[in-house]
Length: 283
Image 1 (spheres, helix red, strand yellow):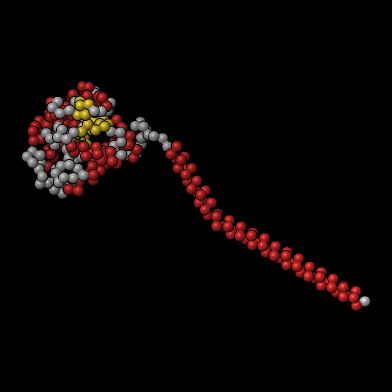
Image 2: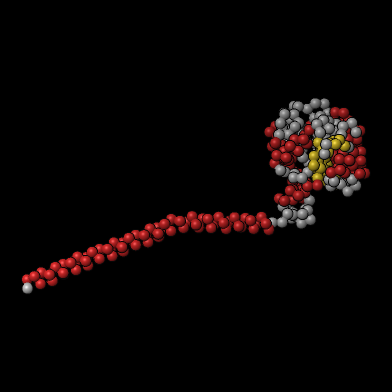
């Protein structure tokens, strides 16, 4: 009887141990599962902002691509007044004729991408006298030509001319303007539809004048060019005024040699004036 009771009690102890063991195992499994689940939640929480940022970047990229794809390249017929794109298209069929001062403009145009598409017929020491007497030619695609032939070969529709620096001491004011008249007549004979744009001559640093190449005479010359332009219905662009300092000479920060040639800053002022002119053509 005692043995049987012992066995029964033993069985109860064993059963209790089994139950406790199973309970412990279940509890352990439950904790492990919960820990994994919490770990997953924590991991997901950490990754969410990155995923959102990636999605945001993808959306931004998509928007940019859409904008770029849908943007139309404006033509001269539909550019709105004062649009920044006006200057970008206006000079595509333009040509510049000038001396070493205009060579600086060409170099600045190349480095900045401004006046995009313009052709430059520029040469050091060039003047209106060379143009009418064929004593110095301009170069286009490796060949030397007169201005009228270079314009015709390039197909330019607008011509921006700045000359006089190498003329005033030789031909004087009246003689230099007379050269302009003969030069443009020759240009028009071969290019009847070309638009003529006369640019004023830029000033000189005060104190660096020589002979008739002085700021008072340059001012007189520019007034004569204005009258010449009005008489012949040519465009007239006052480049000189925004380049001047309080002494009526070339602002020194706009000059590269303390004489007549323009620095990058000076060329930027010149380019801004040209871009303003281009934008005004659509008003």
